[in-house]
Length: 121
Image 1 (cartoon, rainbow, N blue to C red):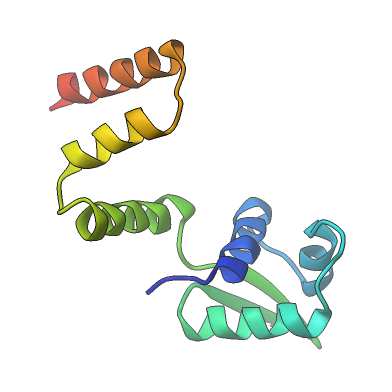
Image 2 (image 1 turned 180 degrees about the vertical axis):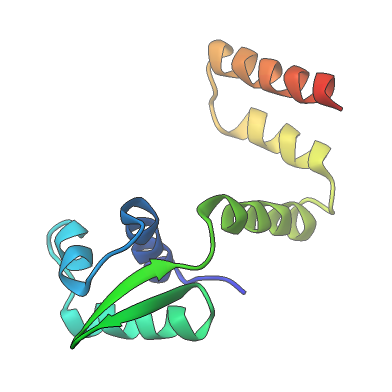
């Protein structure tokens, strides 16, 4: 299951904070801040989807992520590769390196990362 763009934005805030009350989440948004009801609706949806849970402390709720950022984006990238690049990591890598205007140094850093992963396997 995926998050909408606005849900992802809120989830990024929650991943950074690890645990947060509604006030903490609202404070973390840049101006113009969304309405409290908007954030409450997003949290409800994200809870229903299984991305977020909360602990009740009196009348307050302390929200926390149920899904790790790494796991979410790993599934997201794998879905991208499957759906847009014919399930070919090579096609994805080719597109990524040609279309993102990476500098020579960034490409060399990528090569080092790939070489290190090859050594591990």
